[in-house]
Length: 233
Image (cartoon, rainbow, N blue to C red; front, side, top):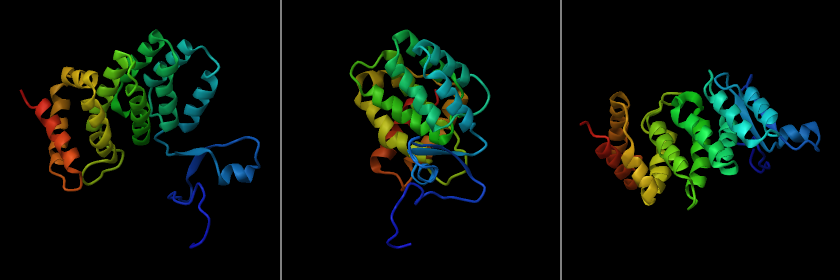
């Protein structure tokens, strides 16, 4: 209604039967915790949000090496993870030792792109990109960020869309721009070699984005650069 105050749920597309995992301050009333949570994640059935939160809560008191190993094990299992787990996963390389980070980054780099939901992919890329922007970011994190960026560009969306996906737009507008602006990022991108089936899907999606009038000229140019780099040999 016009004049009604905005709150956390104002612009959410709420439907009957939906379930959310709500994270909120524990020193408020139950009504206030539900009406104005710190954050919330929709339980879709594709992602075990409750399992994600339980794993995070069970792991945070452990040494970082054990946390990294638990996350790596979870990523190798069956099922998708959501954006809360993606943020937790991305934070560990920044706080642990190089050895701890290596375990986790290797697990991220080798996993199927569907291990995270679409929202989780966006969250993971956003979190890793902030670490990538640091001048002392380790080489394995730089390579992991570049690998994730390219693999997520190829990833199929959870629901069919017309034209570029939200994830592809984010990658073309930001992630590839940041990678190209970095000497180490550009070098890591040039080193990438994709299986021919994956490269073929990338060319198809890049060609579609390169011709899209709904993308900025800069985004279309980056799509053409991807086409050139991964051109059929």
